[in-house]
Image (cartoon, rainbow, N blue to C red; front, side):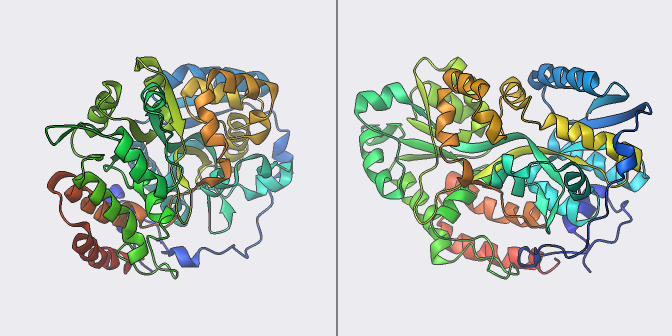
Length: 439
């Protein structure tokens, strides 16, 4: 039984929980029968107040306030108090402190990659009993989006503000050059040759840019090249296998040839955006949540393309879900469940997604008349929804936040110092395996 170093560092030793570590290979469906949700509480109209801890930015508050007002109309006996708790990392720290103090909110956001660690530690409530009682239509969600908030055979949350990484491209420029964004790896070299511009041997326009500051952006490249982050049994790192190294070796080649820009370091995201908007990059990999920003600031037509594939073709889910806290009492959980179901319902899915700038998650909403109007306003999102089932969860392992930081450093060394990634990744594997030994 191993303490999770990531969680204990957040809680600073205050969290008195017995944590059982679980590797990716051990994530099998639980055979424990789900405890039935209290049917008597379903129709209970006793007034109750619950807190919703969140990380919604100021631009999303209009949409949040609208949803809470609409929820109050449907459930007048339930008062939801939204409490902003900062960015995801700050929210997670406060959740740990609340658990240690025995005073938790009923419902909260959680960033997608952090869910396995919290769920594995018994912090979140398994929603299966309520799902079964109310016959919630889970198949109306994208499969990958739903899986991102499940762990060890239990459904701990639903997708709420969902993004994925895409290529945002200068459609005006590419149309003038007679080029289309690459859909396969084998098309990238030809794309680079047509889009890259050099003057006196120096690149003045990069074909494309990838963010090096977050593994969320390049984990799909690793997988799409046929590689894997961990071995099949989930006990060892596998980022140094020939298949896993293919993407970063390509990155090194494209970078050295002057075609690829890699964003890394302080201000990297803003720098990449400005270079793209000034026409110094033809195509940038970025979160779909920033499409509105690109459309509003670009002086050219903006297009969106799904990530190119090779052995696979996938992109990872980002953003946050909505979950219930195990430490809440049963009446609070019942109110929390109603709020979770309302916030992620098909009825409000398009309006919610558009108000916060994230993706719709309900198939029925996407295929509705309202969804058709949405796509008229946001045709760029078609590239995402044409590949809806290829948007998959990140690697679900309690130690992911810790060991992924190790191979992120390799990308940083490549971006900043042009360090050969092959020996650097092999050295990273040793550090990763030391971390994995604790799980």
